[in-house]
Length: 338
Ligand SMILES: *Cc1c(COP(=O)(O)O)cnc(C)c1O
Image 1 (spheres, protein in one colour):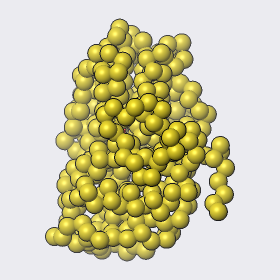
Image 2 (cartoon, rainbow, N blue to C red; image 1 turned 60 degrees about the vertical axis):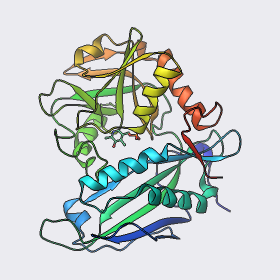
Image 3 (cartoon, rainbow, N blue to C red; image 1 turned 120 degrees about the vertical axis):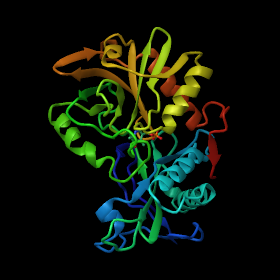
């Protein structure tokens, strides 16, 4: 029997029973693969991923629902994004069906690690990389795809308290026409230093501006960004250096359809923050998290008296209700595993 204190779960790696592993050479397609015991792997010090960062990852969640089912939330979108990421990185393109099968197998084999209804979720991490040793800069000849899982609770330890963000004009996360729009291994490494500094200064996360002219808001380190003002919900359009989040898309759909809010994908500027009624950020890990304060160049804007706003709350609850089968899955976003 596994022994996990479900109420104490945060967002950390908890070792589980098993993981999925497949390998593929450069001119092959993804096939076979198997569940293996969870544990460390061996890698050449000259592996392409270690030296040149040829790799991509995904983040998906499985939930135990009010009906007692175990479901995946929009994993087909992650499969499609993984295919997109691998293409950009010269990794043999991940087959969406292969991805789904690997995810399903891994969750099924680790089903005891899916937290009870309402206590969190099973975070699924598919990751793919260039395995073979090489010194010259070129795509690897061999690749590895793995899926591991870990039970998680809330992303932010202190619960859903509105976030205190810092907008930086000292660092950029992603370059125009670079790889900011794929989930490349190493994209986050650019954000570790600004994030550490911001945390030392008492902020929760960093908001990045576009690297072309530094005027438009792009996203929060690992989550997408939304502003609600006068009945309109706005989020930066996918310019090429923003990661197209699955949660971002879900929020746009739910806001338009369920809540009858006008949704605009557009350019957002610092000025828009000053007049915002509500601000929140979105991601698989954070779901929908309210923003209470944003600081730019010594000026701090307080949003909705540093409280979660009613629209943020409604959108968050609508998505959580779909994920937990408390409301009907009208969009077919859930895939039942058990
Ligand atoms: C993964 C990620 C997001 C959120 O995407 P989801 O699909 O909603 O989890 C946002 N920004 C960046 C940079 C990311 O890597």
